[in-house]
Length: 308
Image (cartoon, rainbow, N blue to C red; front, side, top):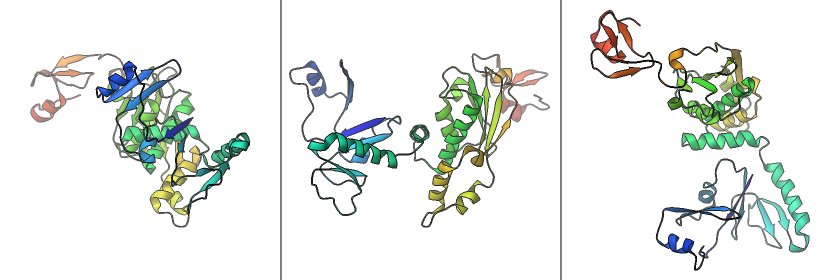
């Protein structure tokens, strides 16, 4: 998927149209649905190419930028333009040979584009969800989730509450698993059991099959061994974790597929009121005693001999 950035000094308007008058009233954003497109307009902001490119969604693989000044990106020059020092020119185009020049430019772009665009899209979505950059942990979490769900044959992001994921770490990889799978704590399809391990179990609620995927213990050493000259450890890890095949990154094993009734998606199976504080406790998270049910905080602080 290709995005296009064009910067202009002209104003965008629809003269004598209600759209123009509405925009002049100062909305924060405006969406126009026309016969040929849907256009979203925001208030004027930064003209920097990076800031404009960031407005695209993660589904965009390549962004073309129409510009009159040199940019630190691979460039296709028009006509007899002289490249700036250190400008990375990958092609030229002339009006009298535009079709052949475009074909050549497409080949050049294909050569520098990432081979796995689906993975790159998933990473961009995970980074946006995480609110940061694609660090090594986010890459591993993204690939781990894609691997586990692919083995199960579950299409992601899951919108049918078919998939339940249990993540064993509370770091960036957990955000990646959430982004890739579509599982959410509020939908009761994502659970966190913080064992401090970069691992996750995926359960297919339709088939009952489950797999646990875990990062191999020697992965940091592998990345260090494969580091290129001049790379720091973070750069090496990101590159290696993107390049290695799944079975060299992770271990995979079958897991228990049965989900306890109180952990299933859907409405609460039970609600009780704590005998001490009176607050409601859902989904079997209470502690049952001879006196009746207690919430866990009250049971831990005031109830002797409480048992689960």
